[in-house]
Length: 290
Image (cartoon, rainbow, N blue to C red; front, top):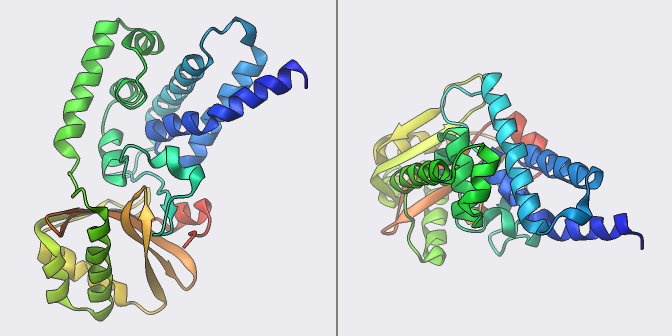
């Protein structure tokens, strides 16, 4: 085995972590893969023998690449009309695919991704690198070309916004499946009372319908329950699924991916539903593994 093969092996050992960094920064699985591949090209072209801490070097390089991609996205105004939902990471209800474990570790559900997407690029990088991956502020500051104190302030501001805007779920995930099953069953039957019974009175539903359509936001149990009766449409099949490590559901319409979403359950009721319902994006992600 030559030196390049050994370097490639060391890189592959770290690919899962690097992909997790990029996914939290970008909310896109394909863009995350692109960022990780670019990091490998930079490592392969550079002087790897001069790198003292490969983990730290690769993490900050992926962070810098992701930051540049976020800024380029903003400059092209590639923003939807409202909330942009992250690409969902879908698994069967009986467990997470080992390749997905790093992506969904730390309760980084769709609800948190919505909040991350509302941060500025610099805030997002400071929070992701420091709070999620324990990168020292000196290194974060280098990526941002700012002082360590400025990086610390960015992370603090982002941390406060994430804490205030991310709904907190019950610790007992097992009980959540009973709520999800009851919600799906009531939606299939068009049972308005059954739907309201499992929804918090102040529940909020956010649905990303695609870049050319405004985000659909529903508030309150009655409004969300009435909207959920659309599950009765012919050809629509809804199944429970783990979505970003949390209880949720996926649906297909005439066999094609139609939606994927997760719920936040508190006090035995659903307080938030975050849904990607952009068929084009879902088709690009491939069939649901459920």
